[in-house]
Length: 419
Image (tube, rainbow, N blue to C red; front, side, top):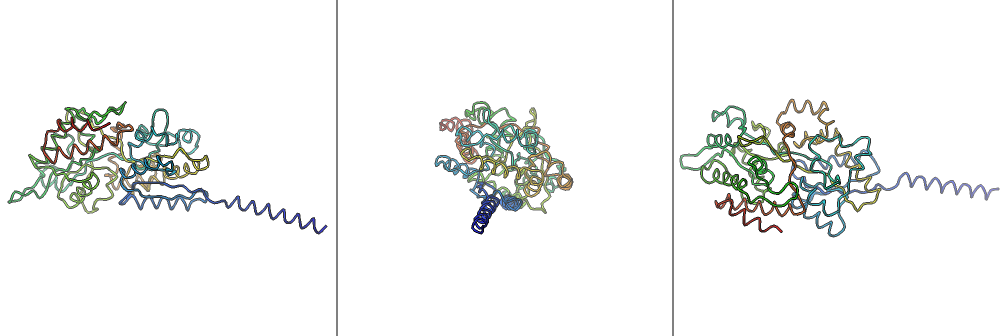
């Protein structure tokens, strides 16, 4: 009988050993590429660390890839190499740019079947940029819209009160009163700094009846009288009245320098993403307001920021693991923490109702401007050639404003460069 007992014991040990290996199976590794530098970068890494500590089935690794432009180029290369990351955080135009590649997974099934995270989980208006044809590709994560930042002390000093201009016509008048010239004719403070980024120029262009591309087809259409009028107006503020200052270089490096000058009181008004709010000096007496409109138009802004996308070429197990990451990133507590740390809007409705966010908005109302402005947000035009459109457009804008040339002629030549 002893041999049988020994054999039985060996079988039991084998079964137990197999069971332990199954329970302690290696976690599924998920890579997330992102473009969050500055303050948002460490915040995102902290969220990733907390996700990993919350469970043992998925191991998340986050990888900073540079600016949005850098990230999109690298992601495109990874698609060509058939080795994209499981998750990627792309900017608002990512749906239209990468949807046609077939490299992104349709997430509608998860949203329909998951009892915790569905379509109704998100703020109304944030999902319009998530669809490519009949596929739902993008989960809103770090979402924003552009706002007007202004120095309240400068306003009071210039006799303008404490409220922001509502129209572009008013902003031009305010800029003249806010600009300071010393005895030698040098400007030591500019009233305004327009950000020459396509996204921050879009509200002004839309309000004037123009667009960068056709909203339905994505065909470039920025060579128009409406767009030229906007750019000539900015050029006149910079070069004729000298009430506005622009910065040469890439849009991101130029934006950083403008923000630094705003922090130092060298600029009184500045347009940038609400996601930049946490990066301003806490001692600066600033307020945020809606982006101005032209006097005969309504307020309008583009949706902005980024979303989380999942690669299509994953196994079912990898997709399920990636979905768990997405769920954690957009749950109410995570979004409340993310918003308070960075300035980006909470993308989900439950986050807005948390006591933390209610108290936060009460103490720091500047952060809620983008949420209040969300009803005026519109979907951006996008297509597989949208990266080319915005690169060509921004180069033309730099030429128009810095070289003081006629906007319409430059735009007509620039649009020919887009294939």
